Length: 139
Image 1 (tube, one colour):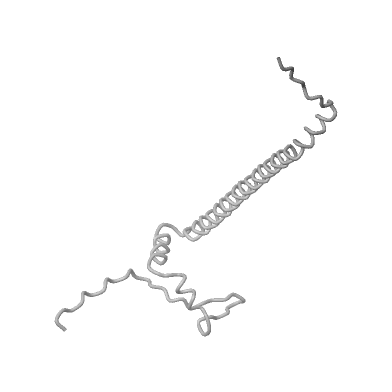
Image 2 (cartoon, one colour):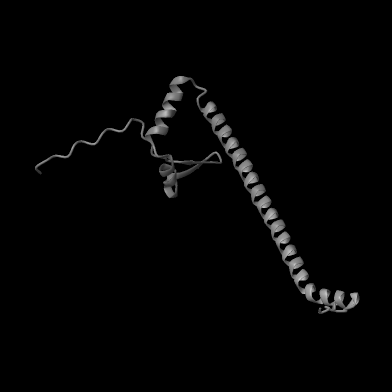
């Protein structure tokens, strides 16, 4: 019968060997874990920043739009103070005319200053548009 001998490595030697063998692996594992945690934190901060910017922009745009609508409503109410006939006349003028184009013509001789205020000779249609005549065939 053969007797097996156990390797007689002292505890200190085996411990040092285990440490030197496993140390690089554990430091790599620690570094990977740290990198992953850092990436998750950075992603959470980025997501929170984008979400906060989106919410702030939405709130700012919404409040600016409400202020513009309120200002327009107040101006229209003041314009329609002369009764329903005046309101209908203003509606017709706004419907029949391209205000942006008409105001773009305000330059040069079309501008006059009266009592410190600037006035412009704006062409306005005061009747509804007439449909174009049908094309004549055979000519």
